[in-house]
Length: 155
View 1 (tube, rainbow, N blue to C red):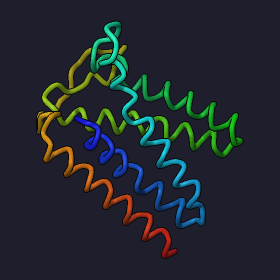
View 2 (cartoon, one colour; view 1 turned 180 degrees about the vertical axis):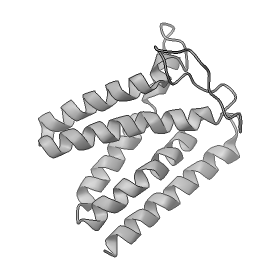
View 3 (tube, rainbow, N blue to C red; view 1 turned 45 degrees about the vertical axis):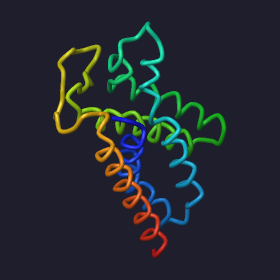
View 4 (cartoon, rainbow, N blue to C red; view 1 turned 60 degrees about the horizontal axis):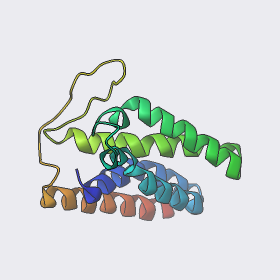
């Protein structure tokens, strides 16, 4: 999947979290979480920038999601305290999981259980390069996230 598709899936998955935070009067934290989520969502594709790691290899796994979550949690905790440690871990992991979910839609798929298994998973629904699918995911995720923010503000 390309950047717009990844962003859309990430926003869709973040929508319930954003809703809860805004509904509890924590819109500033919801915004920070959304920004961090989008900043980390493309992290797994850094593997395509190096010849040392195979594309859609270790960086496209649940183990990588846990590792990114742990690092984001430590950074959040050091910068802003215990609440942000947990929130950082959640957002960091969610960013990678959303990337995996977007990539499983494509024929190339992912191997999410690396290093325990090299089994390949794909739904084979769309090509990564399909512009319509990428923008449909982006618009859908944006609408869900915007709607969550709006509805959260009503509480």
